[in-house]
Structure formats: C-alpha cells, structure tokens
Length: 125
Image 1 (tube, rainbow, N blue to C red):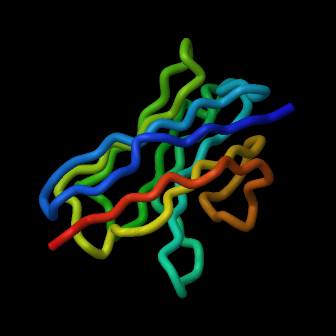
Image 2: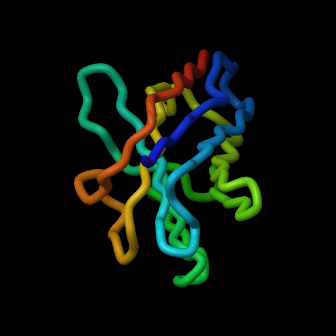
Image 3: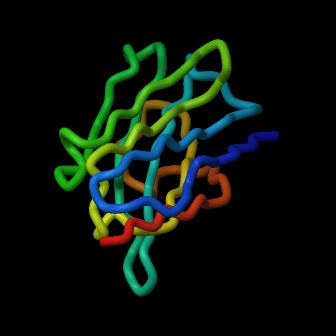
C-alpha cells in the first residue's frame, strides 16, 4: 500500500524559505521517482520538480520558474524526499503535492499514479 505524506508548508514572506518533506511508504527509491507539483486556485496543476530513482542516478528536473531557487533531494535511509525552497515569491503560493511513480517516467503530473495530500504554501508580498 503506497502512502505519501507531505508536510512543511506554511506562511512566509517574500524572499523567505521553506523546506517541504514527502515521507513515502510502500515504495522504494530504487525504482520510483518522486515529483513535486503545485496547484493554485483556478489554475491547473503544474510541475515544480522531480527526482528520479537510484537506478537512474537520482536525476533531477526543475520547472524554469523555480530553477536556481528550489532544490530537490532524497534521503534513501528515511525514504523521504525534500524540496528546499528559497527566495520565495508570491507567485509560488499554491498547494504543493508529492507523487510517486515507477521509472521511467517524465516529470508530468499526468504520468504519476500515487499522490499524497497537499501542503499549503502561502507567500506574502
């Protein structure tokens, strides 16, 4: 039974930082990619960042809008993926969701099968 638990969201001022965590059970990072996606009210779910499996050398992908500001990483021992978010902007405000899928998989929310609940990130100007 696959379960994903996202946490770490909150309210932060523009320019601030947050670290999101996605604790996974029922999957192993040997074979699964983990993605972070976000959805703002009235908007479609969009890609934030993905990290591939150990078998694919933990390749990472970032949306252009977050490159240089966000960093995705994984802790194999804890089965947890992190999203370190820095220099946050009001346009980063959204519900953030983590998802898991067997590799190979593109960093596209339509290709991810397993989803956790969201964690809200609100950035004030």
